[in-house]
Amino acid sequence: MKFTLSTVSKCSGRLGVLAGIDRLPAVSIQTPGFIFHTKGGSVPHLSKEAMQHVSSTEPTFLHLSISNTLHMQEAIKASRTTIAEFIAQSNSATLLFPRDPSESAIPGVPEKESLPIYTRYGRRNIGVNEYMEMVEAFRPDAYTPLYDADTDESSSKKREQKSLDRTEKFVEQSLDWHRKSDVLRSCALIGPVVGGYNEKLREKSIEFLRNTDAPYVGYLIDGLHMNGASVAYMDGKAAVPVVTNVCKQLPEEKVRFCFGAYDAKLVLDLVASGVDVFDTSYVYVKAAQEHRALAFSFDVKSTPNEHTTELDTTDAQLAEDFSPLVAGCACYTCQKHSRAYVHHLHNTREMLGPILIMIHNLHHYLEFFKAIRHHVANDTLPVLRQHLDRQTSLPPYILKEEKVVIPTATVLKDDTEAMKEPTDVSQDKQSKKQRA
Image (cartoon, rainbow, N blue to C red; front, side, top):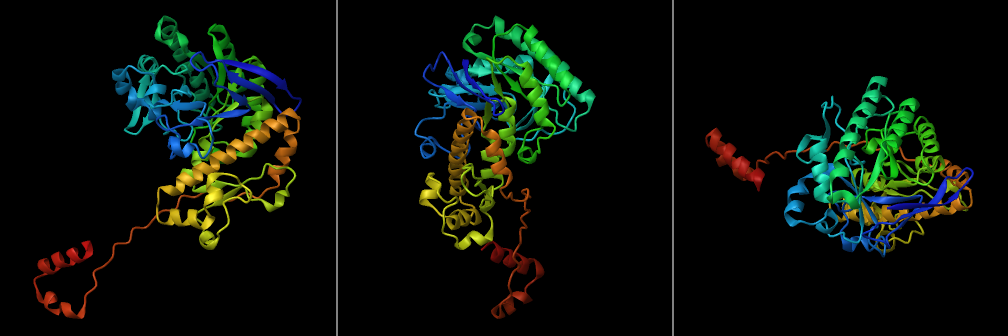
């Protein structure tokens, strides 16, 4: 895997191309760009056929996480295939990481020699040996060594130091395994930069990665949050200076990854700081967990005050609104269906609801990054940032608790005889009526 830097603007970030995969020489993505967040190797809620409504080509780069692919290990070993072949995505590049950006980490004290992974079967502690065995079984196109980045803005200095110490130990052991393995020779390495919000620890993390003398194709800036839907509401005031300082110290010719469900404004700030590649966990969080369609405008010629950044498809006011989710959107959902229909799908708990919102949100995100690259090329990213600032945002999503109402039995006038029967018999008849 190779990153080619083409343009560095004064105040709008940089342009480049990520390509050079031995297995897929024709596959590439333009940066700033994103890789597709997946669950078990598939874009959530979207089949291959549904993805054709988003893009005419298959997803080029896939974000895989150990938490939702761990259960595949034995099957992939038995089939003697790579994870790309196993999930029927041979034409896509696979990048493997320990954490899923859409899933919040469960608070707790980590084990000394392992990292807690939160799978569908609960918490499981993964050591370096077990992790590297999985990497050998999966044979992804690129992966990060095992690392500890479970820190956020509220983490103590002691926890940030522990994150760095554990990461250094994990990375050294992972690299030893990588150098001895014949299977992993074709797998590219991505160096994890940790240290929380402590800039000195971040500098030490970068210095450590340089001293390992490993052929990193890029670097992952992690440890800014604990993943999950709450990341969508980060203000970024503390995170952006940290990322800016890290990017200044990283080699210019290496690609920089930064994952999380960041909102559009924070994405622009991180692009201006020097980040190249993001993921689509934000799209998934909004579509599947919050039932919201992306509606922010990235056309700086339009009037920003007329736009709302999101559309709440659970809003009862949409019940008779037969306009598209976003006016002028060219996605399949907006061309074929209305707000009222998507709202109806939510009320009836139809699986088609999140599918249609995912199609729209991914299309919107694709167009958004095209606009980002255009503004970076013209060094006008601050103009786009100001345009987003003037748009109205919805209040943060609050999970609504559903109340289960158990219907009571209705006693009819003709049931007088039943009321005379013994209590246990009448209760049995009453339960039968309830079941009916």
